[in-house]
Image 1: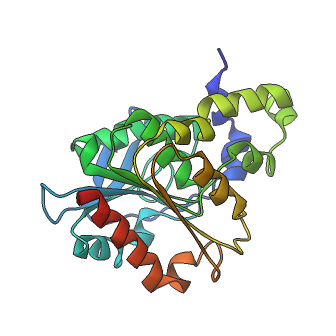
Image 2: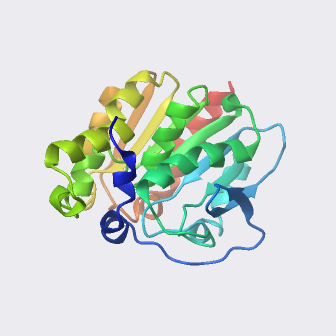
Length: 253
């Protein structure tokens, strides 16, 4: 059995994650044993579907409080903004292995049936949204924005296996066991919307294309000609939200 605790190595935490502390009003606390996550829930109707949003690296839940939940609410959906350990108002420090384990408690804390949830992962948040579809395969749908198809590739940009006390093959086996993105996408049969920019300078658009090719269910891939990794929503605002609105509407029909 591969030791997944390798992903909690301090070198990965220090080089791969960029947490920022920022408290939010009235957090919905998610207990993950050794930490509490300061998430935020915005309900318009207890019977409505809920969009569960996992933000990107260097971002926090507070960055999405001004306007995003209201836009999702006007589409007829509740909005749950998931926070990571060590980010925002949460306790603890970012540790990749434990952050993946936190997904179970985060989704369960919402207290809604799987088929009432739509998962949304942006950038590094896509790793946790895709983990969630493995744990909760009956969710209504999945949205991936500027997402990662190959986490090993991303990690090797910042860490060397020898620094972690392992070999390249050992590290690859650990990452694949924890985050076999291709396998999870192939097994997920519900609708998926994939958004990316052609000129993303951090995560190449080929990641989006691979993810779309792996989808086991209906998929729509939209690669915007304008914008970059961190401004995809702002540069493409009207079309971006129209696509999300159309996708969410289709899950209720």
